[in-house]
Image (cartoon, rainbow over the protein chains, first blue to last red):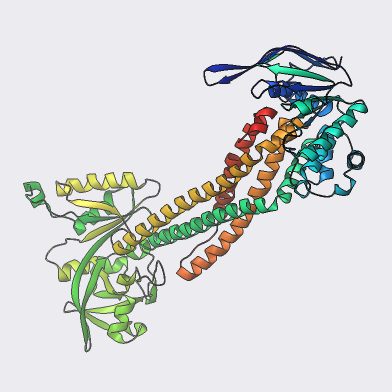
Length: 221
Length: 408
């Protein structure tokens, strides 16, 4: 089992009121699975994704990736897990506007440390070629189309060879054609054995996954 | 990623968004330059004030003057003889806190030499007057102790009066001048004295060129019914200090006067009254401008740095999602802020130095960028950088990736 979450809760404190976002979520993901987490807005699906991606910490419950208990990790240790185990794709791409495509993709390797620049460059270029972006390596993000930007973001998420690829509404900011293209990329990555967790409110997008986890009101239904 | 790499990333970022960096730099440069300029001009002005005070006796020189009589004076006040030459001798003989005691007797008398005549000030005093007031002779000598002891009829002429009476200052030496109808031998002519707070300002020491000095004893014997003085200048012994000197004067003179009917004020306030007022106003304006420009400069710098940090918190969030640590983010921001504040501070110092030169030249006032001014300017720039750049960076680095991603 690659990923095991048990009884995860997350409570936000808004002033003097506690707002529960997750109220006890159990979820396991096997290596190589392609899962879609769906639910209406405010259901807690994004909160769950953030905790699974180690961008946020649970209020209670346990969470293990590859057998390591990451639910209790903080700071530097959590940064290491984010860097090595998780590749994150955002709805708004979140590329560094002043870095080239190649530099953007190599960034996680730079944060990992211990890898010389030529090696980082080689890996970034290899991934970009796989995703059909070889002719864009020296460009800046604002010179690319939305679909191209998201594929650069996917390359960046994959460059560190993470255990899981996580995507939060990856097609939300794309037109249908570019969105379909990105989803095709996910299908292909899945076929190649990558584990993918995708958050979406769009049933058509969710339908591409092997398994759909539906969240409502902070619990899996 | 190592700390060095984080710092390099910060430098790289500063270079890549050069437009924004330039804008931050501009704010820093202008802010620092205005601080430098104002402080330098203010410092120049303060130096000038110090110079003037030294000309009129320096710090520690006190002037005693008769206080105006009360509207309904009491018997003791009426009985007092006010400041006299005897007071001067009492202070000279008994005071332990005084370095010099100079009696000052002044009258408006008629000057006459040949066919030239006019009314002007005559000062009766002692040799120490020249020592305290830094008076130098152009030719001849100043008054001597022997002159005072024997009450000789000798006069030392100010430069302008010597020039007016005899056509040229050097010609006055050895000549005879009539002061208030009594004949005096001119034994000395003084150097022309000049001190201007600005080239367009009046000569603050002109009054010294328009007078004659005679021995105090001669003045009292020839032109007075009594030995009353107009003022009495003393200098406090530096070891004793001004405060102790003042209290000793009060107690010694109270014994002879029976009442405190005199005022003690620091020298330089009365003789250059107008200049003093002018100076006070000038300094006040500079102080206000200085504080305001320092504040404005600080706010401009803070605002620009703050804006750039807030704008980039979301980017920090992304970087953290990719594996950046809080320390790494912090190091990156420090490098950016340092590069901007140091370059901005140094350039601002250079610009401010240039501006100081121009303003000083145009207004013809002394202004120097001292190491102190430079330190304050660079220090302000750095302090503002720390407050405006690093404090928000600490806060940004402490956010969780999710909070940073949602920021703003």
